[in-house]
Image (cartoon, rainbow, N blue to C red):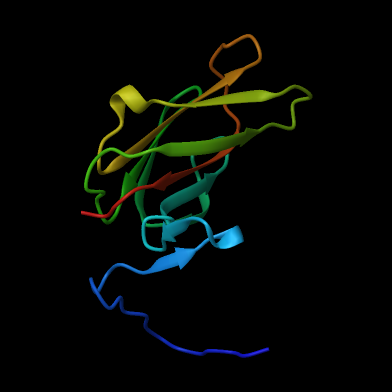
Length: 130
């Protein structure tokens, strides 16, 4: 098996564009576009315990959290998230995409009855940086 060690990869056609051939050699993925651009993992009080490209955190009330993005996205992009609770029932997380912006992630946590609740949560954003 061969090993390549490098600190920098540069595309031939476009410096910031590297294409990776997928499984089966039938599709390709742009490496930069496939990377997560920002993510956050936080407690029930919006206290961040791990993050990337996050500049601020705000607890807006029960189950409502906002996180500032350090390096803005080029446009509001696809967001995904996960939620968890130790209260004995599942939590539902909704990313407020109608309120999404290039510099903020807005998270809303709900219990199985869709009532607002505080819970541990994480969210991530894929897209292009500005």
